[in-house]
Image 1 (cartoon, one colour):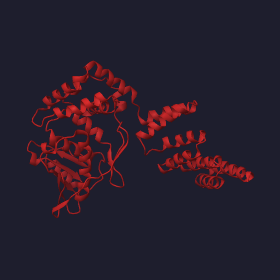
Image 2 (cartoon, one colour):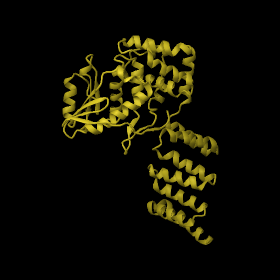
Image 3 (spheres, rainbow, N blue to C red):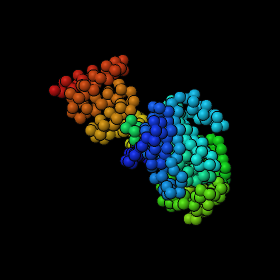
Image 4 (tube, rainbow, N blue to C red):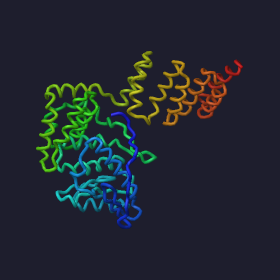
Amino acid sequence: MRKRIFVCLFVFAAMAVNAAVVQTAHYEIDADIGGGGDSAGRQLEALFEVFNHVFRFDPADAVFPLKVKIFTNTDEYNNYVSSRLAPVIPGALYLHYAQTDKRELVIDGGSSGDTQALPVQAFFQFFRAFVSQPPEWMQEGFAVFFSALDFNDSNNLVYEENLAWLTTVKNMKIPPLENIFLEEGDGPDFQALSWSLVSFFLNSGKEEYTRALTDSFMTLSNVNTEAGNAQAVMRRILLGTTMEDLTKDYRNYLESRKTFAELVADGQKAYSLGDKDRAQDCFLAAMEQKSGHYVPYYYLGLLAYEKDDFAKAEQFYLASINRGADQGAGFYALGINAAAAGKSAEAVDYLGRAAQIDPGKYKGKADNVIKMLAQKR
């Protein structure tokens, strides 16, 4: 899935029940004084909206509000989780019980913790509010899928596809897909395989697979067993295909996907061989995967410069600097680009910055270009 920004447009009607409890549309948040109940409420509602944009569950099928407890002290969070005989997971943990009134999401508000913990654990709470015993692959796979959700400085949700497991899956001896559909798995290998199935159904480019997955959500039952739900989902998915064809398409999909590092390496190789169209395709794909990384922007700047599209080259170079590129290299490239565009004053400014940042590498080269510009006046 490509990068998306989910703007929080929902109406957040928070109402203080008492000094420490905040009520939202779907959550009841019990926080220590100063524990950020209002902020957590906004974030949880935003996550809920994104989760249900995928699953389309009817809110009438779950018991609300979902309970949340926030601790401002990490030791208190650890002690509380431990007292429930649960493993202590930094950041947040969803505690699931047969009794719906005992279920709760516990958040460590006293530590930054694992930034992926909140969307993952909030998803567990969301999913199991509607399906108490979901298929294991679906729960684990979507948890990894949603782990890439994060909040930007404007407190809006952003998403960049999580491909951390891609290389792992490619190097695995993949079991029959039926085993993944029906297995009650555990451990990183099963997480990787589960994520790969979710990624395939959502991103294969074949509408029939995406539709089969989303239709399978309607077969999930809150009163069914895990095995029963897993069987129902697999039967629905196989209505329009065979396991043989599904397996073939799944394996082809995995081979077609590349990590950010692979795309950058392929782009650099294509650039060095003069295959500019191939290089551009690779760097554009890398930019879509990781829009916050400077490398694709720098190379796209080089490619635009070589096409004499100096305005676009400048935009890409500035974007690369803003994302952490070497400033000396970035400003030198901007200076050369401005000189080629006939903007002498801008060129001198950019080149001067490059020389100041890294005089050993750029001062001599910058001075030569500045002298050439002066001679043309």
